[in-house]
Image (tube, rainbow, N blue to C red; front, side, top):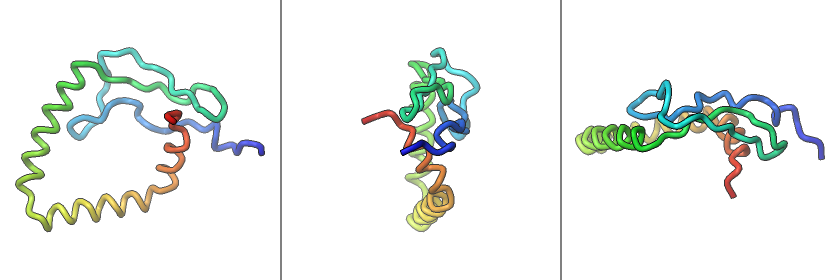
Length: 104
C-alpha cells in the first residue's frame, strides 16, 4: 500500500520543551533529528532537555501544583472540559503526531 503525501509533511511543532507555559528558545542539549518511522527520513529537529531544563520543569510544576490545589472543584472541571474540547478540535493533528512516534 503506497504512503500518502502526509507522511512527508513536516511535523509543524516547536520541537523544544514546553515549561512554565512557554516553549524554550534553546536547551542545554544539542538538537536531535526526529526520524519519521514510515520512511526513515528526518522530519523535525527536537531540542531535548538536560539537568537545567529538568530543574526548570520541577520548579514550574511545583508552582502550578499550588495553583491547581487552590482551584475549586468547579474550576478544575472547567479545565478538564476545555482539555476535552481542545482534544476533539485537534484530533487529526494529535493522530498525525501520534502516528509518527517511533516508540514501540
